[in-house]
Image 1 (cartoon, protein in one colour):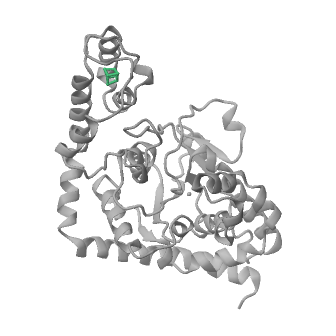
Image 2 (image 1 turned 180 degrees about the vertical axis):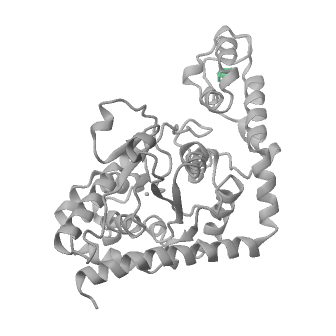
Length: 365
Ligand code: SF4
């Protein structure tokens, strides 16, 4: 999920869109689940410290979902191998990411956090599901083609792991009997494959209680894909991010170098805020002041330095408590490990329940 689920795109819900059985849009939970708390499975590949794009694209939504759903949050460390074979730092990256999750609002008491590699049932179910899909079907999956293109590796370098990525993702989801999976719209084909797996397994194998799997749905939120400080896709590898854990000074030092409307060279020049990434950040973190920024930029009365100072203040204000909490958590690594241990125990219990049904249905006694 690059990021299993990182950075969904903006897509307001409409009555037409809700006709797709495989998709639930933000704001439709109550209607679809009729008061029942759905189970949600969300994951990210461990990339270390998270940046503000992760927050806007996924984490903020995850935090809110804890109020209305039962969540499992997993660190997709096996999935990380599809983009980075060197796993020397995988544990450190996983712990860094998890520290951000907790500092910024994931409550591990309510929502177990675990590493995919520590719940062996993921690979067991992956193997079984792999028997239920053809190579041709996997090759037709547009999301895999997009991933290979994004990685710049070409079809010749595509591994069995790349092709089988949706199979492992389906195992991740079905193992916890997730009702919903927050994904970007480009990831919906993965959810459709997962639904096919559920149907196919149920057709072939029945447990004493009937169907083992239910068909999960994609959950699409309205959160934005934020541009990086240079206007390109925000990515740590491009060096254009602001980390959630950056100090307030670092936040300013990065923001002041952000690319702006090239036509606005100095204060007094009229700018076009709609093409400026700083304005995108104002939209997200300064909704009450965004009109003033728009007018100031367009008229020229607002200079870019002042505009960047304002958004830096807003960002620092919004993240101050979480950054403080993160510093406290960093000083308590044993706590993070204990939380992970507890989450992994809960996840293994849930996963084993499902696998017991799977083995029973398949007559693996
Ligand atoms: S004033 Fe603000 S919105 Fe306008 S170009 Fe400068 S940084 Fe961008």
